[in-house]
Image (cartoon, rainbow, N blue to C red; front, side, top):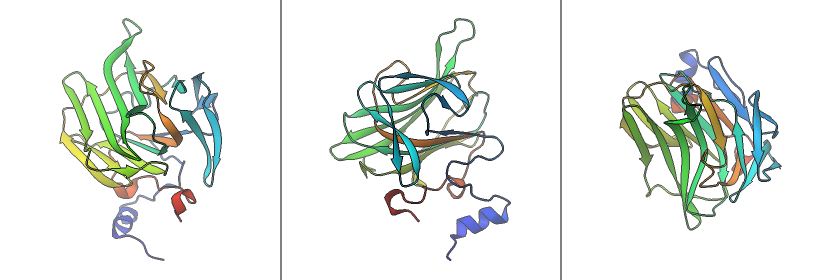
Amino acid sequence: MTIALGSLLAIAAGFVPARAGTSQPGQIVWTFDRLDRIGGAATHVEGHPQLISTPAGKAVLFNGVDDVLFIDQHPLAGAATFTIEAIYRPDGGEFEHRWLHLSEIDPATGADSDARFLFEHRVVGNQWYLDAFVTGPGYKQTLVVPEKLFAVGKWYHVAQTYDGKMYRSYVNGVLQAEAAIDFKPQGAGHSSVGARINRVSFFKGAIMNARFTARALSPEEFEPLPKGLNGAE
C-alpha cells in the first residue's frame, strides 16, 4: 500500500484522517441521509428535495428550482479560524448556484445580518467552477477562478479554510484561490442548503455531507471522497 508523503507527515503529527462522514473534536458534521434533522438540528423543508442512494450511502438531491433545506444552526458561530468541507455533485442547470449559506442573525432585530459564509458554483455548458465567499464587519472576499473548470455530474470534495491570515478554497484538495483577509468571528444564526437563505440561486445536484471545523485544516486532513464515488477506492 502506498501512502502519500503528506499523509505520513499528518500521522506523525498526531492526526489520523477521518473516514468520510465522521467527526473529530471541534467539528460539526452534517450528514444528508434524512430530511427532518441534519447534524442534530431541526430542518425546515421547502420544495421536494429527495433522498437518493449512492454507492457510498444516502444523499439529498435538489432540483434547481425550489428545493431548499433551512437548518437552525450556524455551525461556525464564534470560530476565529475555520474549515468548511462538503462532498457534493453539481448537475448543471442554470449559471448561478448558491448551495450552502451560513448566516449570522442580529440578536437585536432577529433578522439576518450582513455576516455570512457562502459556497457557490457557476455552470458553463457541461462544466462548473467554484465560488467561495465570506463577508462581515471589515472583511469581504470572493475566491473564484473561472478558468479552473470541472465536469458536471461527478462527485467532488470542496473546501474553504482560514488560518488567521489566509482565506483559501480547494477542489479535491487542490488549491483554487487564496487571499489575505481580516476575518472576525460571526455570531449565532441559521443556514440554508440548496439555495441562498433569501431563496434565490437554487442548486441542481446532490449533497452527501458537510463538515465544519474551528481551525484551518491542511489538504492532507480533508475528508476523503467516499469509496465508490467516481470509482474512488
